[in-house]
Length: 308
Length: 302
Image (tube, rainbow over all chains, first blue to last red):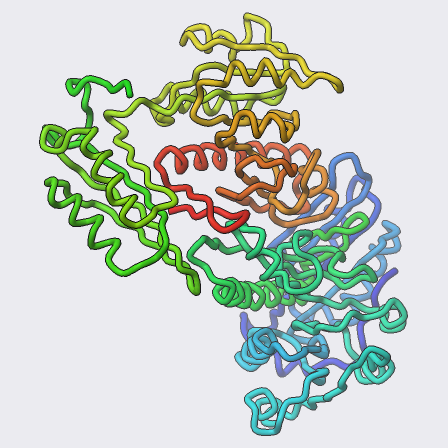
């Protein structure tokens, strides 16, 4: 099914960077494999004066499916944004595409996200910092947490400074606050669980319906569940890791997007395990979000991802 | 007690050989002072020291490397001196090794059908990069005389023992007899599980390579398990063998990146590369006295 873009666009006058009249376009495509797909896609782009800068094509062994990701620069005066959509829609129909998404980062609205966190805030703080630095191309509509943060704390002050609401929704055994969360995140493109320690129910996942990216502070599938640093420490491993993945019903088991590791030894204490882990979590989560926003992450087979 | 003649002393300047000492005892003030004084008093020059005292624990671990002149400090006197210190500090472990004078570690390698680790070990051994004597190779897989492994072993006078295994018969009694005289064993993708009785009878260290990143993917076909799990990193783990399968103290782990572009075949190939490196590194560390048991199920690797 083709994803349609929202109607609101930013003015062409806000186009930053690059030669006059040229913006970056990204197209991802997933369809049954056939001869001629790359030819048609590239011909389409060329016919509109677009210049392809990067192509990733992947056709898995023994499977009749086709994945591609193209980056191209074009002049929106020559190839208007809505025409771009129409052109790719036509090709999408032609090849019965399962997925055909175009994104023009400079013209399209930024991804709108909500970040959920609990008491541990290293990932949240890191995301906010990168966002402020312009390194994470998204709009943060709010931060939701089951942990209270006083007004004079770093996070609360930061969010206030930037006009981002902070919603304290304490959770308890009987009440996961999912109804309120759903309402708050209704309008988002995807969610980021930045060490949010509540398990989201199937009902929530079905109701929300869009992607949710989580960071797990362990190298999955090792050490699922709670306190993976302590589990790793007790197991005497020589490498610890972090995993970012899509959230599914099953805890810590959704398609993996990114993994990173770091060496540990007998010289590490539980505390240094945790510190190294926190470093990894920040990098790993950021990388996953970045890849996702750049349309590099595609669902693949039952529980995996293609990451171009 | 057999020692090699002084005339075969290799490395370093005239009359200087490398000594390695590892020590594990209850922590007190003055251990490093005493150890280093002992070495200095015999004209030994310390080149490297690793000391580790874990937080909140009264345990002391050290590994020292020093060069000395064996005419000045004879081999048996080295032993005696360290034994005295060992008693002084009620050491749990005190080992001295002088690689150029002491007999090489005597090992047996066990393998099954997969031979990439075995071949790699044999190659490294031939290159002089694995300071061990291989007394034999044991396998539950038959290899005909014209195969690479058999020809290699024959050329080097290393016996190959084909001991088929079956559900009822692990050939453990025969294996025990063949390995009686070894210092440790290497399981180079040996696919049989050694029983508790075997481990107790043998009594010495056994190093295994597991083709997965423990504790993920224990048991069979970890490459396929990893492939199905959609992980972005695969690994190999070398560890000491205990009764519990793939659960003994970990010595070394290595990883490599995989992606959607990898097939099960490339997962396996990358894994084989890792296994070779990881096993070789573990054996090297072990022979250099860098690996010490630590707490219940871990290792200290200096």
